[in-house]
Amino acid sequence: ASQALTVQDASNNRLALGIGLSLGVAIEDSLGLDYSKPIPHTREYLTILNGLLAGERVAFKGDLYRVKAQVGVAGTTKPPVLVAALGPAMLKLCGRLADGTITWMGGTSFIRDTAVPLMSAAAQAAGKPAPRFVAMVPVLHSDDVAGGREQLNTSFQAYGRLPSYRATLDRGGAANPADVAILGGEAEIDAGLAEFATAGVTDFVAVIPRDAGAAAAATYELVAARARVANKQT
Image (cartoon, rainbow, N blue to C red):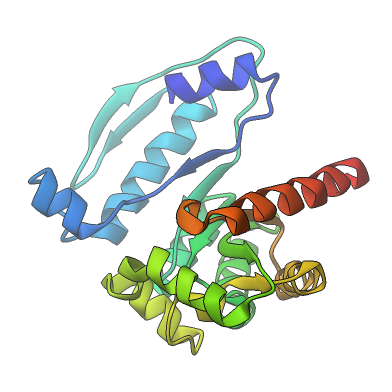
């Protein structure tokens, strides 16, 4: 919280703090930590974090955390907290306790039919403003659609096997990462961006395969141009 508020101060209160649980394979296998209770863990963590970011004196005693602390940086406001969420229970929790979510490997149908309704309903029930929906989506600017799909599936193949992302692909009716990607020429890229916006996405993060050579460079150029236009409009 103190680091986030320091960045908030340095950025003139423009920070959006993104956090996530990581993956069981990273937390348990690599770090040797417990990953058996992700929802209770996130609930306690967010309760503490929200209080600290708001400058409150936090005295929290839960099953996983014991915290007595207060932090603050003069002149800062509480930054919005965006939490990576994919499963229904986590989306509902984030609707109650966070300001938005960040998704990955979720296509437009997952966003429209699962993420937005679940999180929005939870936020409304908690008396919170409409949440932000940040979609991280594979993007590749290429006229070779077949080759582009192969590239995307190769670059992001691991996510088709990891349980949480596999479940997200399945919820959206996607067989592989290329099925949730935006791929094609300029018209197809623009149409894909518009489709995500219509599904309820408020913020878009293009994830470009770095090993795609000239197509990756073309994608960076196109996405940067679209971002400049969007920033001028806001």
